[in-house]
Length: 322
Ligand code: MEV
Image (cartoon, rainbow, N blue to C red; front, side, top):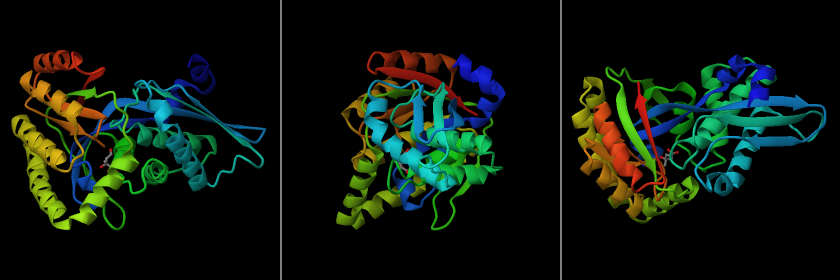
C-alpha cells in the first residue's frame, strides 16, 4: 500500500474512489423500474492502474473482505473487469499489458455493492492512466458495463451510488436511469451486519424473475404495495422523520420476505436489531444471505444495536448517511 502511495501519490488514488452502498428501500423491485432509495457508505474501493510494456493482465486484489467473498465472486469479478476493459477499448493481449491493484477500506461483503465499487474505481483509474477525460456520467456508464459481469440485468443502482455517493432516489427506465441526490437534514445513523453468507445476485435476481413470470398477479400486488411504501419513504427522508422511515423499512422487509429473498439468518438479525432499540430494520441488497441494516436514531442506540448484532453476526459495522 505504501509503495502504491509513494509511486502515484495518495491524491491520485483518492480520485479513484468507488463507494459502497446500502439499499434503504427497493432491492429487487428496482429492477422493475420503480424508484428505490439508496445511501452510499463512506468506505470505498480504490484502484491503481498501470500500463506495462509486456502484454497481459495482472489483477492484485488487496481489498478487505469477509471470509470466502473473494473466492466465491472471483469468476464474476474477472468477467466484470473484462467488460470494463472492453468498454474502454483496451486489449491487454496485443501491445501493452495492464496491472490493476484494488484496495481501499470497504470491506467486501455480499450486499454492500462491492462489485460496483470495484468497477467504478477501475473506470476512474483507467481514465487517469490512459489518460482520458471523462464526466461522472461516463464513469457511471463504464461501471454499469462492469456490473453486467455480476448480474445480467443490473438496475444500475449500485454503480450510481458508487459513483455519486450520498443518499439517492434512483429509478431505472427504458433509457438512462433517473436519480436525484436527497438533502438529508440530520445524518442517518445505520448499523449493518453480514450473515456471513455470500449470495449470487445473478441467481437471486433470476429466481425473482422466474417467480414473477410464473405468477404475474402475485408480483404486481407486491410491486404496488412497495411503490406506495417508497413514496412515503422519500417523504420521511425529506422531513427528517427517522421513526417513520424505520416503520417503512420494517414494512419493506416484510415485502422482501414475501418475495422470498430474505432468509432465516437475515430475519433473526432483523428481529434482534429491533429488540435492541432500532426504529426499523431490514435486509439490504440481494438477500438470501448478504446484509441487513438497522436504523438507529442516536449514537447510544447505534452502539446498543451493534452490540446485540455482534452476538449473532460474524461482522457488524456502524455508518452514517449524509
Ligand atoms: C443489488 O444490490 C440490488 C438488486 O436490486 C439488483 C439490482 O438492483 O441490480 C438485488
